[in-house]
Image (cartoon, rainbow, N blue to C red; front, side):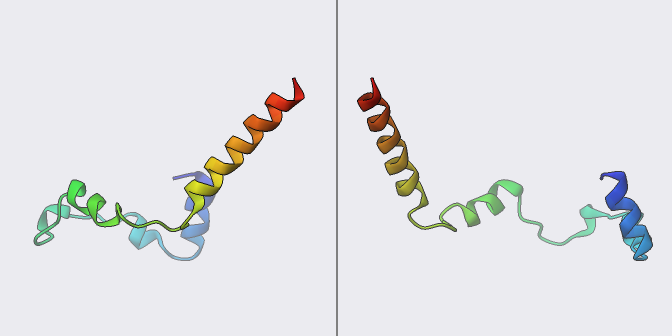
Length: 68
């Protein structure tokens, strides 16, 4: 963590959280990271964003061809 962020967190009395010794092995039924990633795979925050980028790229390439 960057020093500035760490210092601000200490100012807000988060020192107990920053220095807490987390024991991840004691967590019951922890889902593997590979499975957790699959949960969010179908999620698209910006619907149509890929299409808009594709169109913009095609327009820019067309304009570059006209400038020659």
